[in-house]
Length: 496
Image (cartoon, rainbow, N blue to C red; front, side, top):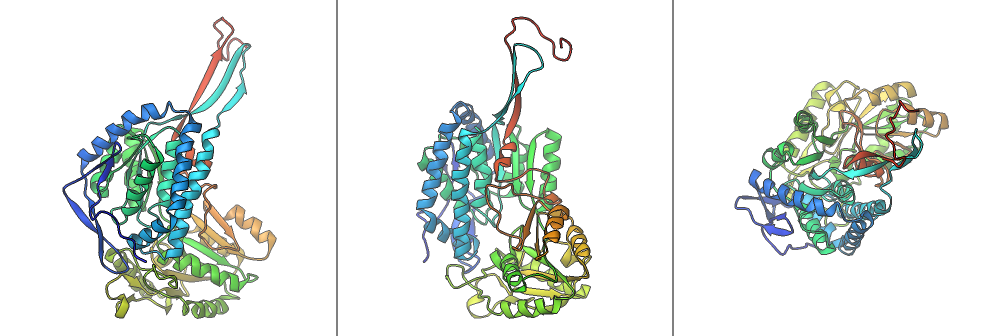
């Protein structure tokens, strides 16, 4: 089923109005090569209009009691639920991921709406005893003001909800730059906000490039928070620019995630998890498994089972319910993957399966790459160190549990890790020693749930988290409040 949009050219959403922009570019379905819609290429003047609208709206929105702000998010959740299938079909068309994954992503948005709406009756601060008589002390959360969010193409609606919903419930206004490859979800979510009754100006969507619109976000003095998900290089540049302005910044960047398979593991379960983690979303996830650290005693058996299971993977247009692996987002993504195949071969890794672009027959018009398996990789190889962002996984043999932990931790990133073992002692040691923000036991490297913090260590981020109650820390400032009802001047630390 192909869902048609009611428009062939999208517009920015500023102060509750749809505002056209002259220059635009085509949005291409990566499965078919067909243009779906035209997306605006905005400039700094469009950003300025959106920020001024957000700045004005935020002052009023912050005065709305948080439980009332929550009512809007509950309505957003119900609208997302009502439109789930339609949104999923549109998501697959613009992004390429298979339809069951698209449904799962929309469900994340639904879950996030209801979860964060619940925070409207919490947003807890603390009360604490004061050190002086007749004095009251407490802390409370305060909104930051105008928030800028910059989201990637690989999860075009889920990541946006992780960022925008906590910002809105906390009393902020949002200016959002979605990826130009996947603008339809932003367009649809803006319409849902509008239908749910969010006041004008609280959510604004500006389409355009990172170099123009994103840069304007980062350097605008009235945007006091930047929440970014994307590449490590871009994130570092954003952090540097925000640091000079003393602007809050939350970064969620890359991963080089590993599944550890110990010699006592359930290999059938491990194979299933590796296939899902490595080849789901065609490997285009920051949490995708791109390394399998396997104990040498079970390496050959695991290889054989993986190769056999990979033969059953179906590749094609994600709208087909039988397809398990969809296309790569664009030509640049394909070229990057192809370059790493050559790197792996030159480094001495053994290519067991895949390693080539699919171009014949039904694949001619789309961007398809065969699921790829390397073996006999070493921990220091580039294919074992650098993020490829495609359906490529490398097996790295190790001799012990301790070596497996060391190899897992020996990369720049620290997002997600997984271990398969039936030894409870190893399980608890792994939880402690794996240096990633997310750890799975007897499961793959993907599958985060929205009520827990999402993010990583080292080169993956800068200490903040998306989703979970921890997301509120990005979009609020802590305020300490003291009420002295003694009628006299009391001096803390002195008059005690």
